Length: 229
Length: 409
Image (cartoon, rainbow over all chains, first blue to last red; front, side, top):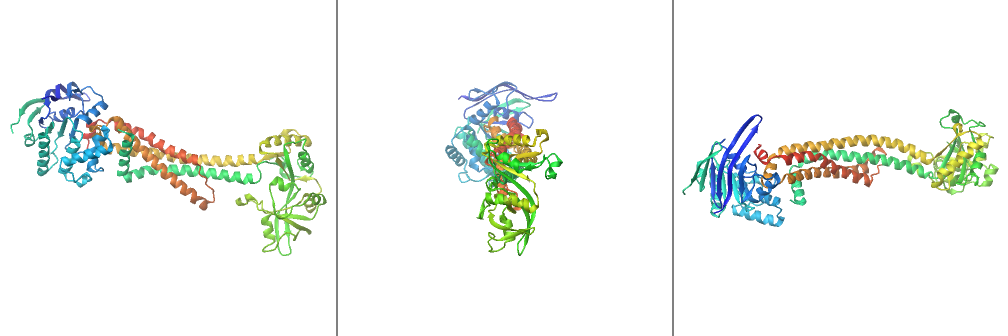
């Protein structure tokens, strides 16, 4: 299996005035194609920083990050935007849907920035919504959908570009237990169909659904366990 | 991302915040409407003056006695050196001395009471020669104008202005052939002038009575050859200044004075137009300046709202960036949004100005003439305001880092 994600000695230092804070203190990891990895750790462990770097929202202070064979640790803001667009599908805790746009128009957004034609965007957005079981909610606005449904729209948006990895940051943090189950079942299903998923969570029950658990603590990976189903 | 997509995204944003968009536009709307209307009012006033004056003849030069800067001229005393005479008029009419002069009409003016058997009317009594209708661009609507013979004989005839005629002879009575008396002298009405084009402004061009200059002198008991004004028609508008020079030189020579002590003034309609326009222009610039300031304030309003909008939509910006929008794409989106607001404000402003131009003249009795140029310029300005005041908010939005933007609540 080829590695999609490779981190090599990644360090991230934040500076606030005279105070320096090292959020990541040399992280080495690699994630293979088709893996379902959960990154777990308490708050303040550096898990959000790791997520930002994995998502190309931030660059490491030191070390290198290869995503799909490309070294992204030295890229410019505009180049990173293209990498995020092509290779990463984001699912956020707060869904982050645009309230004024219908579900399909939220889903097509990454395709707009990829320069896909309008007709094809609509087709692919509807297909992605059907994939997450919302084929009948294409024209609904986020406000007309339940939390679980909104998060499924967000998953559809993450899927629509056929990215190298789906990066889910506490995707169930704002959901009730029924919706949580539905969203996690959806992620399982995507994993079964060969998607690479990185899930960030602090809940062990959620992490247990993944095939591999990375534990992060004080800016270092302290455990790397394969989960036995 | 294509411009069409950027435009669509910006349009969605404008539409989804209708109230805010409308309030943002309001400043531009008011600014553009008031700029167009003030310029239109100024233009309307200038056009009005121009049409009033060109109705009198644009080839016309007016020679008045006395220098306008000297109080002697106002006296207009008979026999004094400052008075224009019929001899002056004849000299100007000479083709060799003044080749660019086409017609000369010396006139005397005084006020006189005209009596009919049933009523009376006081009007300005103009003593003129036969060249008067040509030079003053007036026509007789019924009857005829007096002849050279009548001028030399001092015939007891009069031609009435249309207003004067209707004041003296009401109803179906045809004034032609009737008689009026001035100070006991019976005059026969031989013609009525057609209404002058400039009567709309309430001028008294149509309230007048024209008699042969010799008759007028006899009526006022004057034996001198002095005249009140000499109207001179140049051969063409182009030759107006040449005619001006000729008249000036001729009269200085005749009166034997230097140009510094000139006892007459030659003015053209152009100089009247210029004086009137200068006043109008000052007002237009003043009002236009105030309107321009309100436009500037409107532009700052756009910037203010766009900055608020950037702050308010910080999460949206973060999300769009996370999904692959480059800083340039975000900047363009906000720029297009600001330009849309500016442009839409401009269009609404123009509509209001057009409606205003249509209703205002009825309310304030002032013509408003909208020019295409001013309208296009206003549209361009509103677009430029949108872009100009959108640059700063747009670049702020573009500079936001995606994590900061996403993290904010």
